[in-house]
Length: 140
Length: 377
Image (cartoon, rainbow over all chains, first blue to last red; front, side, top):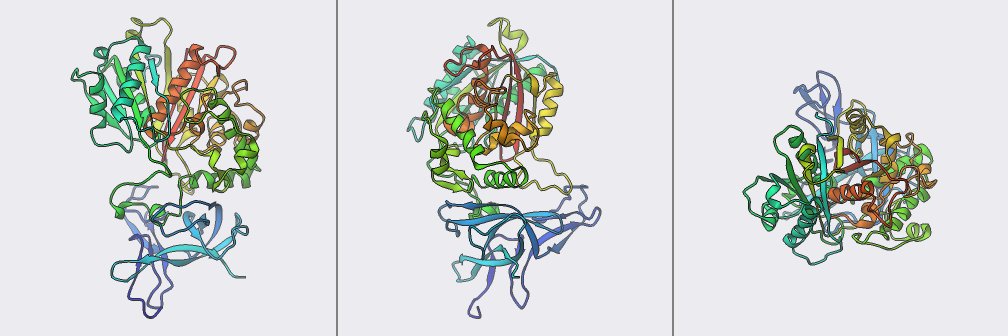
């Protein structure tokens, strides 16, 4: 890890990759007027239409509400089939679509408790590490 | 909105197929001429045009209409993903109901590559799920299917049954891309794409074109004594509801169905034949519930027990649906309308619904954009 130049998110604004002793998190927003959370973050609240939203770090743990095991993948993308894509519900009542890692294909279940982690999708032209987020089962 | 002011005067569908090599304008002309002839009108009677497509070059609609004639009418391209063409028809209907025009032609068409639907545009603007590749196209339906199985005990066999029926109906449709009959076992054992969706539960990319002549009831009297009336319609996009996830919702189908029932005075129990958006066959199960043909959670058994068969209680996708016809994105809505038109006219042999169907419901959706229409003969 120490030789890594920089760690960049595959898409800006969705999450903060781990680094400098920080473990990384999903970036959301919370409407100061009505208290509703969103991910991805929003400028206009979809609930009350207020524009005073603050950026927040979302909970790192959640529960799988549904999933699929993809047996085919798009060319030129960093995932290779088979892989699991899950919908994870966070305590903020947000559902996030995410890759699942660290679980066998036949072990994934609706209701499974999971935690946020990150995976390397590739490198950019400067040799920086490009990362995306995933969820994995919480070790018991 | 004015009721019973709009009719479907003519429809045209060309043979759909995989990478046919046909020219876009050639396809458009064939579909357009078929619809004009079916309506018994001349292109010079058309006052406004809409062209539905998603992946074709800028200005495609203008070129397509020029193939039929150059009368100077306004032509507008319409894009609502898989629901583009039915939206084009609704735009025409809304303008006709408002009294702005008497007759419109809507052409929908697409040439599709092999494989999964590609994305275009600046890579920076692509959604996270495309950049990472974590969501192949059937993924949303697959996750909804898994959730449906978990919540209601729906079985993979139920999804396969919807596909089996689609392929069987499609075998009776000369315009379908695939006209093959498959057994439940063949469908369940075909290549897994996104669990629980197998290849034979997926609509394939296809080339195709369709066209619809939309007309005011008053004007239509010049051409026919028995047109198919468009008696209710509603279009929409996903709605934010506090505490509910919209990431897997294809669109506000239930809400739109209610609006259409109010406008037409016809409820799900009145519907004799329906077309629903089965881009992947679990879709039929979710949508028959949302349209009110059966209670929430019972779509699996409703389909399994044969209620959506041509001879069933509520025949659905009598032409084979997207699964068998193939999915030329911009042309699918018109294909759905045409089948309902043939069913209500009694000319859908050999897949004609028995007992002279009189009321038809259409549901077409794409990436959240949704259109629902009620027709009556």
